Image (cartoon, helix red, strand yellow):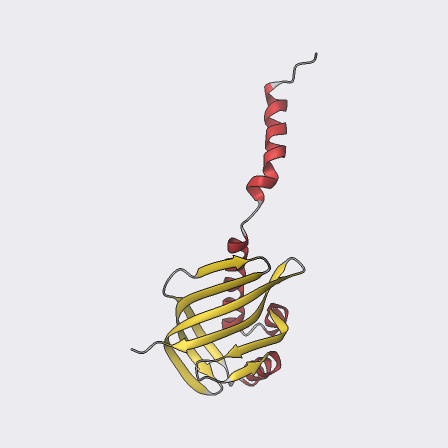
Length: 147
């Protein structure tokens, strides 16, 4: 019987365990999607937002208005909505149930929604869906936190 060298054994071990160590948890992927989403909002990256939002996306903004994907894109194009800063005030709570992800957090936002200023702390809730191996935002809502 042939003996394998120590280098060969180590190389085989590394190859066999690589997929396990390279794999990420769904919560990590979802958190990365949330970060990319918030960056796209601040940068007004409309092509990225079009890919992030599902076709039937719904947003309930800080003023209680219900907006569709088309509404949000139009407001961003017209500058009725501009976000200067979105800052996490706590680590987002991320829960994954199959192909559905729910994120809740407290954020401080500086900017405008629908031409009206919004600045301060908000409770933020996102509902994401895993579609074609990537997370897409189905719905989110902002609720002002009384000061």
